[in-house]
Image 1: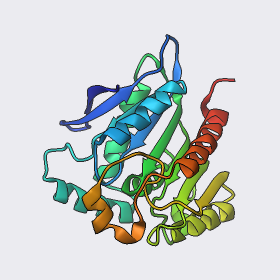
Image 2: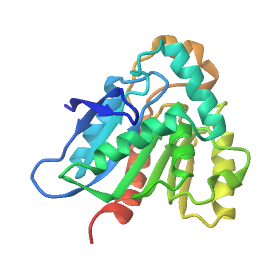
Image 3: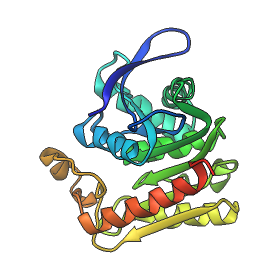
Image 4: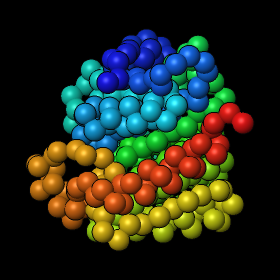
Length: 240
């Protein structure tokens, strides 16, 4: 299980978070995990564990631990996502700095992965070209209408579910933007999957509130998405 950590913020304050490490010693690539709208949940910590099993040090900052009520955090986050800047990008950057500063992490070999709301945040963040970030994974996350917002982004692997009536159109938009900008990418839509299909979360109220998104784990699609993701990350982050 991941360990609880605190991530210092520039100017003072801290975020709570979780970190998972691979077994053994040595220097590893690192990954920043950006959680779904549900926040720091067991399935998001399981993502950190999955990366650790594949030889990465993974940290997940809790974007809702800044001290404000959660609904305010989410509202601020949505505004930040639309602008591509702001507190959320600063929080992700703080997590990257914390991760890169570890003795067991090579700060020049960093990846970022986001899910749902966190997918849009991760995409906005990597579009700024943060140092050491070589690859990103965007999973059922929002893509901007203006492709120029992604200029300078790192290579991207992305997965969406066709049964997700809200986010599935973002797959084609993201693929088109990345192709136009000549950014290496692998974007796939899974026929039998909906939203949040890659992780085994249990959110019965969320399934009702977000009914058109068809929330739910889909094992076959998830297995293929994770296979593609790790192949994409390993190629760009694992030491040769």
